[in-house]
Image (tube, rainbow, N blue to C red):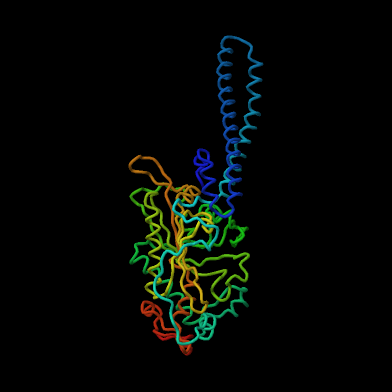
Length: 435
């Protein structure tokens, strides 16, 4: 969340930066409401402290008067009367504090000063591209046609078992999914210096609040209300929260984690928006990169993290582009974001496979994640970053569609062949590939 001192000291500056986001006018009104609530809370705290001081003063005076043999009944009655008034001011302060926190949780992060200004995705500038779009001597098929014909993808069984927007990976299709996960983890741990973790797939509300999924995206998350738990929408949630309520030693920073988890999202309101096949699923696999660093290094860390995600696509030989999100398209908790979009020939479009973001101290404030500054000895909020390294479902789509051959078989990239155990995936081999 935003620092209340920043809002208090420079409300117009905060409003100006939020104005570049989508819904800027409503956000400005929220800032005003936070300030009014903050004033009410501080007034209640001041009055409570004044009454406590007055009660203490009178209590001492009563003691002195008793020793002198004076009648103190009226003064004692007045002191007793302070109790109800103190309780009232304390209740007002607590209510204002809770309300202020709720309001702050509803205000998104401030866009970084260097973030391009724009209203929506149409204003996102392209930063760079890698590789070329593949050219085929035949009409390319999409991944649903390819994967179904090869016995790799079974959407019908998943629908019978669970419902739409789920899939069963079969035979070499399942092996390819597992191979991709292992390949991604190996590259990020071996080549990029991340530490692998395998976190729980269920998280509580405080963890979701910490990484800004709650309360903003409550309608997108699968909940288990009887247990007070939620299915994690991304490994960002459990992994970043590994250090919630901690003061991390400065010499441990930067911390780099990589984690595989399945991800669960309701995708409310997404029907009909590029949902065919694997493109928008309620459950999908993802390998996530998380960084925790000092504020001075976070922008450089974002560039490194983005390059690490890009390296995966380069090793697989997949054409992609990197775009920077403008202020109007920026995620709720992010201050600066790069999206990596891989080319999918069967879709004739780019698909986002990674969103690499720096959150500044926005998440750290929510989860009280700090480090001790060795120069000042003071505790400071760390900066957090994350990005997909990458999301598997859409990577799977791009891989099948890019590596398809005229006969419908899939010629795997060299780096994947040791993991899958075959060079090509053909219909006769799909169910029981030979290693």
